[in-house]
Length: 259
Figure 1 (cartoon, helix red, strand yellow):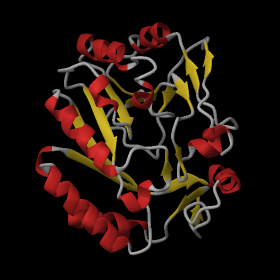
Figure 2 (cartoon, rainbow, N blue to C red):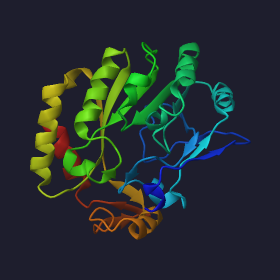
Figure 3 (cartoon, rainbow, N blue to C red):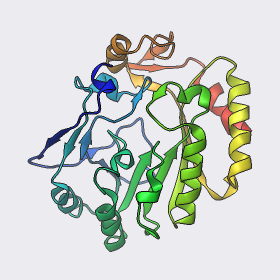
Figure 4 (tube, one colour):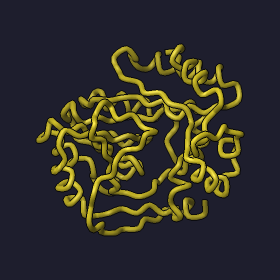
């Protein structure tokens, strides 16, 4: 938490770049070849439920500056889904360096690749216009009763404004309501949240991905030492080394019903 309170970055060059197989916790979008890149390790945000806090010992993000090497390595993949902001929020750093332009150019040149950047950032105004449809910009949205646990991230209203701007700029955009967090007055909170989204966006025209909190139990154990939070210390059910809500399906189905 001390390191997260300081705006510091570590710049590095990554050697022997390779892409990693995507986690079973994530949607592979029907692609047999699902990979993620690690151009940034760690995140500028400090979300109390994020596995990154339990994965990395340092709170300072590490940016690998040899972007062309990442692009060249990605171009060797065939018929693949590539998540470029899997272990960070790449768009949150767009004001420091325009990461997305070269990835969008790659998507333009390689229709067999499906490239996704997921974000909580509001930096959409820094992105180029009219990217190809095989470049996806995913917006992680939460009720403000949950965003209070997403330290340094923009509030819901700013993210929705950014989402609408992305659609206006021609982006293939998606909403991720993931993770659902079981806050106090859960049903009322998520009902108000979904009603707000319905008033702001035509939800029938956008894909929505839903998931509840889940985490590797070892990452959660480390997170408890960082965040003395009702999220980290909730009495989750532990099965197969994973921490999940016992009534996970009920939470997901309730939100689906609201949609």
